[in-house]
Image 1: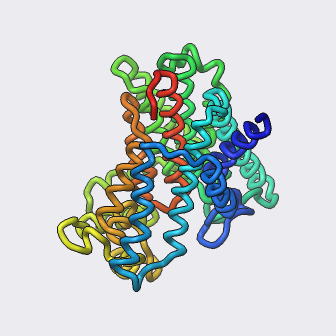
Image 2 (image 1 turned 135 degrees about the vertical axis):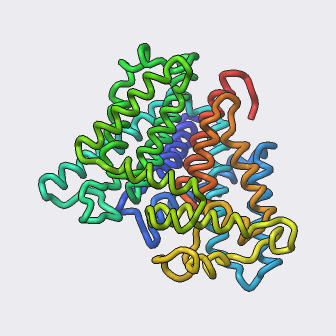
Image 3 (image 1 turned 30 degrees about the vertical axis):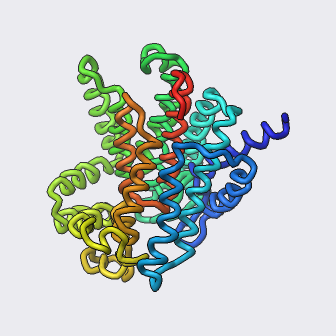
Length: 399
């Protein structure tokens, strides 16, 4: 029994850690995390051992069936089993994780400590990388590096913008789990002394990694504390962060602000002219939003796998032929409205928690804007699902 408890706890830790990091040595073609893929191959074994069925899993199981049968029957000429199997691996891993979590051998204190350690790990690796840049030594754990921006560093993920998203998500989950542990809203005057190092690590990582995305996600995390009585204090804090970043030569905030303004126009050319890198993620969603529908056969059952890659490069300059992007709308376009709505229903059901409305912002930014086959997507679903699990467990709600 003790051995089983240790094994199930170890697997839980392995799944979260492998989802949360992407060390350079484990990155394969297309920045695929081979460490994560190795962990995901264990999920069928877990499901075979713990094969209970839970009502909340129905939407994910229906989605997994839909991406097998719909493209195979509707557009068999475009069926690519490697893509479908990759999606299924993520789905099986979530199911395995959910079953392990329900064994109740992973406590809320374990989860809080793990979140804290992951934030520390990102900070420590980033500091080591910054020291390497300062001293001219080979940069530790380096990937997707541009020598023209020497302090734009990836830390423990594949690239800086990924680290910004992941660290913000980890910090947000840390805050809401800390609230569950102390059974009250997070209070800086009461909690900051104990959590000082966590906040220092979070802010140092987000402010000095050189990613404009980090500033956007700092703002999202700070929204957690937005109440009428402390609007002035948060405004001063936000202003101090921006001023301090610019004072030390970190100008990524200006870029983020410009991208937000351009995106609000919904004009593809304006977004592209403002920042091509950001446009590669935002503009395809605008393009696809004008094309998707659920009133035609292809709208319901998709145009076939890789269809978006046949035309997207015509709309976005400086991208290679067969380029595909557009977040969750790619799923709708290629697999159809039915798999799309099944995945949206599953993911929202997994992450939604009454009173934690920032969950929906993280869902939109890190799930809807990404698609299905993404490490950050499933990390977001797993972490927010886990946070909801512990909250519901404390309040006596079954999930």
